[in-house]
Length: 336
Image (cartoon, rainbow, N blue to C red):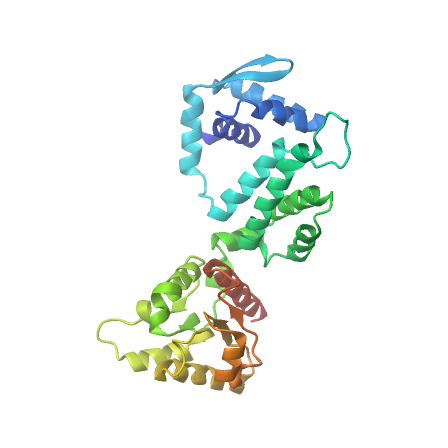
């Protein structure tokens, strides 16, 4: 069976049917929530799926009350799942949030006496709470972040509709989604000829297991070329020479500064080498990350980088730090 046998819209509806087979109220709510135009499209998709022998539907009160997915329907669904571009965790969570909006009514502040407003508004309030978690995980670097932050902070009556609108816009932002997928072709196609590595991770060995390994994995998943001693040094290498080569051939340096970093000969040597490079050419190189220490400790220990904006591992996950770095790298590559 070819993927071209049915329309993209009908394929999406088939997925929606299968993924909501256990929810007996789903389609009643779904049809109740949509516009006349969307109702026409949705009914057309049901007819197409019936005509193609993928589902069997019986209608009552103009709503499908029996939907049986037939053998070819499951076969087609499995085919699509195996052959479509795999969605990232980000995309799956975004699609789940958008799918839920199809059966959630916007909140109200007045209703008939028989309507319990708190109960009526609970689905949209729960959705907003889940959306806030999603925002904190993935969207802080999106251009809509200030607007979303304001929506979530004030939680006005329009907050649900406004948040849904923002999420729909983000779902159409192909550049941002590509970045989240780690498909930024610009990173590989425009990489600086002078720099062998996009980034050097400077760190204390004691921080490898509890932080650095995960940070490396997040950066690597975005197609970023990394000098990380654990991965870059090979058997028989003169490690001091290889590390200095990595320092000199890296576009940026993520310096992960913790108490374990303090006073270690080679971490401080790396830091000084990068400081010298940055001071010499006047171009941003050092991207400090404080890990399990305060900004005050950083300033006290290394006043030379006190004026360089740092971020804290308490405020950003490994994935978020990787995305922040990818944005810095893309900006640099665009300027070249």
